[in-house]
Image 1: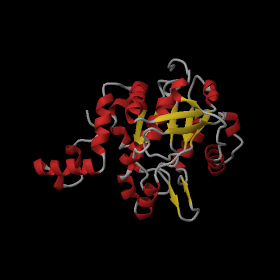
Image 2: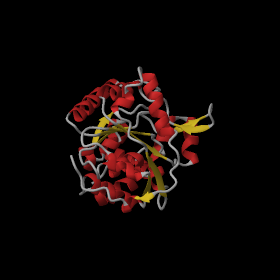
Image 3: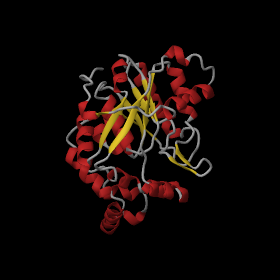
Image 4: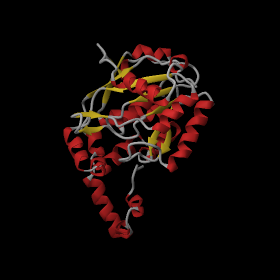
Length: 289
């Protein structure tokens, strides 16, 4: 099983069609480490859900630890939303599903079309068009994903978002690594559904070279993402769990801007936890839906 095949490159250019074209595609996949992604995926491709994410992270040699994990015991039985920063560009989504879907198997995460190619996770993914270099708004082709998320929440299930819609980058103005402004469409959705919100924060980041490439062009930076998966091997990635924000607490914010600012602060200003628990040591209980 493969996430991306040589044949998938045919839609990009006629240069990738036919036998010679497929050889060119194979070379590019090797150059970008996509072949390594395919190999790891193939090792776990027979699994689904959290069984897949657990095996995938193990094969990648990626471990993660959770701060304030006791707050996960307070998750509601019905619908809720998770919001978090987006520092890694793939692994953060996998980790989110691995953690939350181990408590609620019906948890679905909104991701871009590239991540949705991981077919073994299709029960936990809802696909939208990536934001790319756009600062605001959702693309028209994302409407179906929004409708699916709304129906999912309306039916009593939890959902997760990266409200920035794009992986974190380096800001020359602020001389810092940060997420872009959160998408207005996501904020409108969050405000309209009126369900509890769980902030989550990832405390680590990609390599300095990744952010340097982003200063040249965001598309060039995106080509680096497969390598950013493998350079986290044998590292413990840190994440923190915030306090659940109730519907009543959300009502005090009278407009989208105020709610968005509050939610951003609940993620980006979340204190670094005093201690962490390795994911494998967490006793989160059986899946419930």
